[in-house]
Image (cartoon, rainbow, N blue to C red):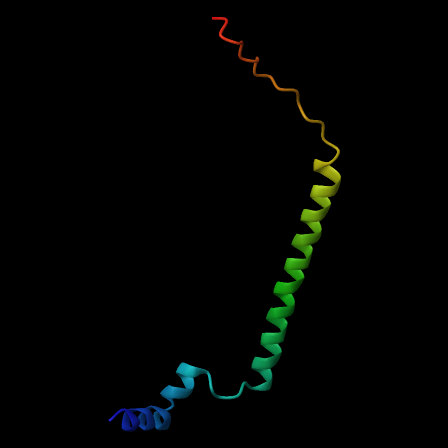
Length: 76
């Protein structure tokens, strides 16, 4: 029974749509490569910005002294 359902799905084209078994056309390949390139470009830019921020902004900032008064040794 399951083989008959499988063969019917293959014949109707449902199987190829569910499993992405059909080969991609040239346009789909170009679009896929373009999307991957776009995402990687954004990732690299974000990493460069974060590295620059961590290097140039946070390392040069001064740490404020502790403004909370110290707790005494039981002197209340």
